[in-house]
Image 1: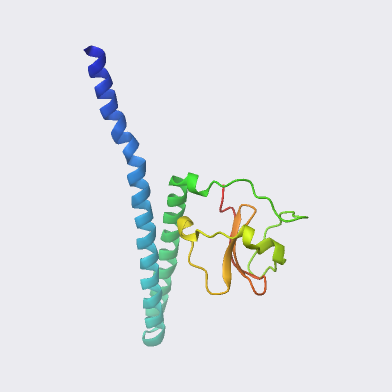
Image 2 (image 1 turned 180 degrees about the vertical axis):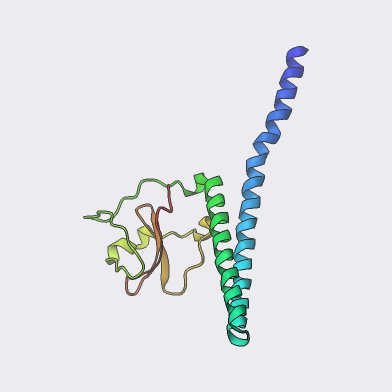
Length: 163
């Protein structure tokens, strides 16, 4: 009887502890969405201040946008840290002659680097914005880059994206 009660108490204590990370990650995803919404609103306020406000209003609106960007970055990092398993991918195997070199916006890839094999199709799973028409999210090493598929130019790059 004593063992049964001890096991029941241990199970009741362990179950809420297992449920907490799930709730924390859901809360974190919600925080990322809310921070992105706040950033959009602050950018809209900045445009309004630039059109109709004085220098003080513009300066204050720019400060709000900067703070919102920082908060969004922090929420994104927290979300990524709490969902490490989603960002863990198999080893990257590049095209023939592949040697990793960090890339930045404006870099031009050869077509073999942004072929169908390297596309990140489930970009919403990683909380990446939807690519514009004619652009694709592409995995390059542990980085993810948005490439204009017509020209091969990098439009956006996140280095160290995958673990």
